[in-house]
Image (cartoon, rainbow, N blue to C red; front, side, top):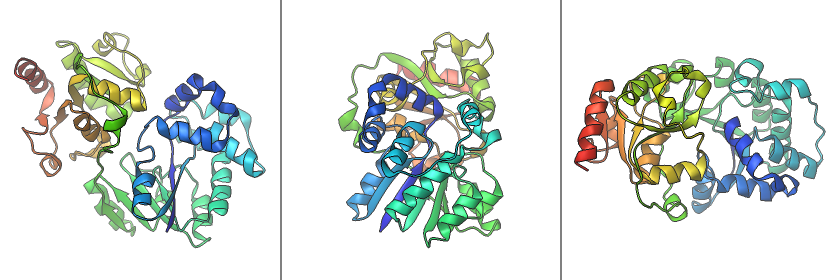
Length: 336
């Protein structure tokens, strides 16, 4: 079976990557893609690598990376229609949610599908393509499968999928009510990271890596309450969503992506995790696995299904609110 894994990367990561790798812009598409995947951002090549081990053909595409996608287009000669002003506006954080994705995203992806002729297109971002483009893919006889663990896109997008996998248990029932086939699909940790990112001395007592956005307001309030009493080393994007007086700014170190993020996790004694509001009362996010995978102690917000994923009190410890989190940090720093 031939599968295209279609992903999108955070604009902040892509801007950082191309700012620090300017010479790659003149290289081939394959060279650019190898370098991008080599940064271990998100799920990187973890799906394609393991699908290949199972005997399938699997191809990764970072659909919203303008540099590598335009390089692919140049090498394969598709004609692109662009609105340069809108494309620049879409580079702003979350702007694509209002303006939609750039038209070149759909154009190049359709060209790649025609070129690679996959049996399955697996989307890690259900909103990256328009419903019209999704229908065009299905018209080619291709199975359209998606994965989601974030706020929902439009129902018009959702209904185009033959199957949606999700690590949100409550989404499965929702999709079934919409007449969409869906399965609960747990995520995990790619063990190859331990060969690539070596852990060393744990120099940070307490760390947090994540995004600050309107979707994280409740979790941000807890973090701010704790940071007013205990130093928390903070990395992440969305600083503009924090107040100028936020105690999280005191030990803010900038953004951390991919392998740099894993190095920080590997240098941390305790990592705090909190979930996005759309997760409801279910534990599911990547930080659960990234932190424990790199050997840090994970303090995560209590969720109904946490015991299905980890042995609580042995593999992870759950907190209930800011005061409980403060007490747990103080206890485990003294009693490692």
